[in-house]
Image 1 (cartoon, protein in one colour):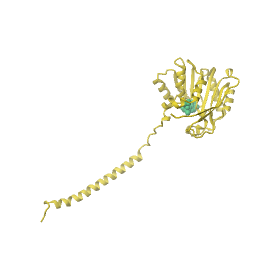
Image 2: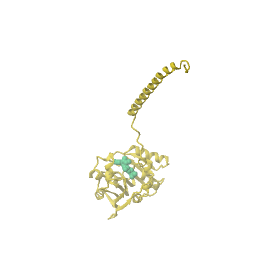
Image 3: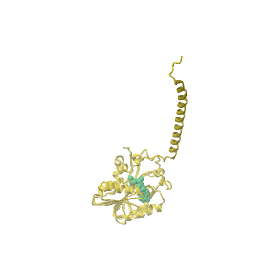
Image 4: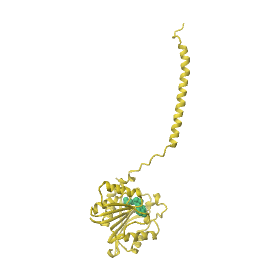
Length: 276
Ligand SMILES: C[S@@+](CC[C@H](N)C(=O)[O-])C[C@H]1O[C@@H](n2cnc3c(N)ncnc32)[C@H](O)[C@@H]1O
């Protein structure tokens, strides 16, 4: 005796192939979607580089670990900038020293930040504008010339501008001559370099001679262009970021020859970098 409802056998026969067709269709769809996704991934642009904190310009301006370094205080002390002074920061980068100097010289003074990198110059100009610092001027300069007016500055700083000192002597002499000419009588030039070998890992400077120059070589060249040394310091920074520390850095201060002491103050400066 038949127990099922009439037509149920027919229904069973017709739903099975329907399910099979549905499953097949789903499989084909999944395959198509998978292929589309793979294609899209292949065409997708590379993921955007997210700069690490230390790579971001604002982190380079506000850098508490750098503020704590004795060398930072020494650089500022040796520049001897006073309220109303005219100061140049050559190779200013994001303006770490520019903005410290702007606070020192005050509204009656002026800080000129120059750099070959238009992005850095734009950053400095924007930062100055947004903080109401009318005493900061930022300019792009060509590589190979500090681009400073003659006889205009009380103090000029070059901090961590490796490539000026990685080339050959004639180029360094030319730079020093231009820097000397930019100073007022009795003006000061400060050259600061944590670690000359750092240039070796920076792509832009790979083609340069990363050996760099010895401080004594620079002092000799400076004398040739009318600058006398005030302070000569070999700088040893124990910093885990600097892998190749074959050549320590230096902190050199000069003034125009007529105001320079007969012997410079000479002592080593050693410290350890403590990241923030
Ligand atoms: C390592 S950063 C130092 C920035 C800043 N002085 C500081 O101590 O934080 C070096 C800067 O020097 C700039 N620079 C390199 N060669 C230069 C040149 N020939 N004239 C001016 N700027 C230069 C680079 O573009 C970069 O912004």
